[in-house]
Length: 77
Image 1: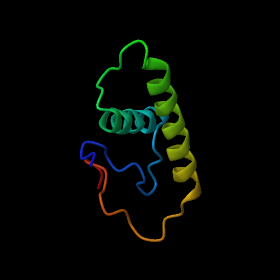
Image 2: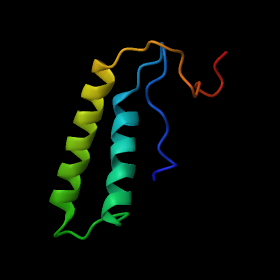
Image 3: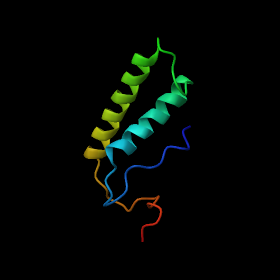
Image 4: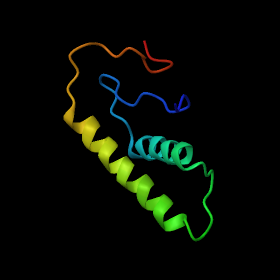
């Protein structure tokens, strides 16, 4: 669905808050169909981004890695 959203869970490299929010923003843009919402829809759009970012961060904080990441970070050895 959102091919431009990168994998955030990589061993030994915690996702930065701005990366989590950027992924949430991409998701909300895809689901809503808005790149930038009209002023009337902006509060709902922004609330969705924040809620999804928070849920994503909780997920990343809660999961444990039992296998190496399938998609290593570019430029890492």
